[in-house]
Image 1 (cartoon, helix red, strand yellow):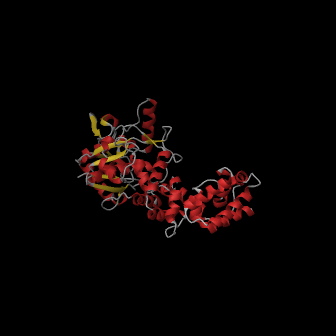
Image 2 (cartoon, one colour; image 1 turned 120 degrees about the vertical axis):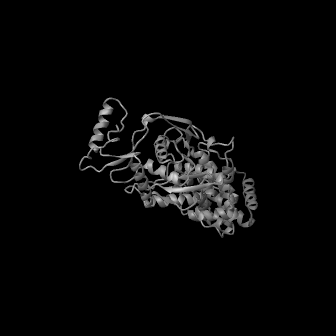
Image 3 (cartoon, one colour; image 1 turned 90 degrees about the horizontal axis):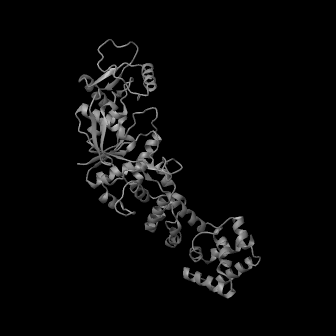
Amino acid sequence: MIVTRFAPSPTGYLHIGGLRTALFSWLWARKNGGKFLLRIEDTDMARNSEEALKAIIKAFSWVGMSYDEEVYYQSKRFDIYQKYIDQLLSEGKAYKCYMSKEELDALREEQMAKKERPRYDGRYRDFNGTPPAGIEPAVRIKAPLDGIITFIDGVKGEINISASEVDDFIIARSDGTPTYNFVVAIDDALMGITDVIRGDDHLYNTPKQIVVYDALGFKIPRFAHVAMINNEQGKKLSKRDGAIDVMEYKQNGFLSEALLNFLVRLGWSHGDQEIFSIEEMIEFFDPKDINKSSSSYNLDKLYWLNSHYIKQKSDEELSSLLVGFGVNIVNHPKKSIILNATKERAKTLKELSSQIKLILETPSNYDEKSFAKAFKDENTKGLLKAFGDNLKVANPKSKEDYHKALEDFVAQNSIGFGKIAQPLRLALLGELSGAGLDEIMEILGLDECLIRIDNIIKN
């Protein structure tokens, strides 16, 4: 059975790079009828944030990526790690290192002066003497002294790293806390992880983890290291580019379906297809199709996808989602008309809510520049009043009736459409953009249209 995992540290919020890695892992497990586990790597007690942890759990709930079994917390597994530290020490596969920080710093300076790569020199590897007084030892694993550490990466192919590149790294600090590469290998082995899909910033952690697997006789999982997401200039993604907390995307009016569709296409493809349902992602996804090169974050693409998914939502779903953005039209008698008039122009739920508010809330003021533009002709107010009078007589009921009233007025007065359209739009919305005038008037109804026309004439 395929078992994958996502293992974030709660030292910061879940960003989209992490969510993409989680998505790839989740899809591979679901495609194969396997398990997807969530493990919180919270061994750094000083930097852990309860708020960040809650945000990670919320993000998974929002995007609908369910995990199997309970959430695992490394902070609750220290006794397990200690058991394996003791085992390696007793088997002579690890040893206590009494090197002080000052000695280590001096060694590094000496190596750098010789233009050598800083690394531990193994001085306590076979130490049998009397331990120096006053030093709490760290525990180091015995890494191989020669040969090649080899593994097949599902994205990058065969990786060969000389054993000389991996020194006897620390598996337990002098205060007893275990280190990242040690606990990750222990957890992945004990949890039965078969496939590790993660960012390629972890690529050179893999040889160290293989050393741990080998020392403990654990089966080594398959690895797939995914290239980073860059901004459109090919540089590391920053907060300004979109490397923000996943839940901020929700707050900014993005739909989870759009975000997942956007992320799955950052570094993976299936022919020329751009829009994928969750079911299609599961059906088509395979780690071997992940691109070797970095992907480029394109905000316009995300807006395009979000706009598509907004249009696909039912009126009931959309109206329910809009409540979170300060617009409640769940029981509005003209709900469908309102949404049809506005959703084609909205790229986010935030934009959609703003457009709806424009229509439903009577303008309390008018933009000075827009007013000057719409009413630059001294006859405009008279023209607008005449249109209002015509509306009273016509007593329109539908979008088509309002459209005909506009057309008839333009024809009768031999004017260009803009002569009445601009001041009328400003009267109804308070600004010069938005839905179609006939749609707006149908939503507002005759009485409200006349009130808004009268308000701007008196302005």
